[in-house]
Length: 99
Image (cartoon, rainbow, N blue to C red; front, top):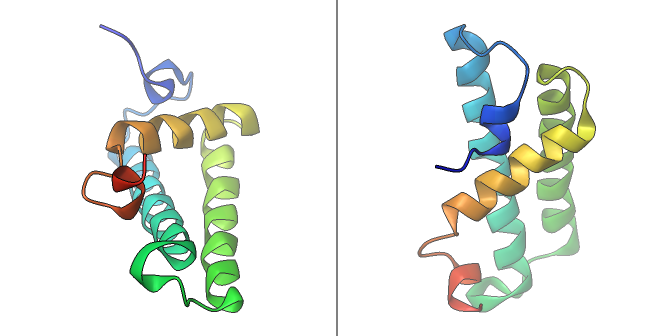
């Protein structure tokens, strides 16, 4: 069984609050990223630049917070995000249908 970047994280995730915060951050990043992508493709291609920028700024803030939670390791935080997005496969999203 392979491990995800989250499972490889040396941070103690035994406290439910830290694990819950990481789960919330990942869910927000996924939602914002999908929203921004839909603004660039599919039915919502008319999204304004400001809307897409706002969504991606939210992703940036969440990325910074996630990096804090994993000991300041930005590479590890990005690995967790990419692993989560890959695992989610964007099932039912516009991205999944365009691959």
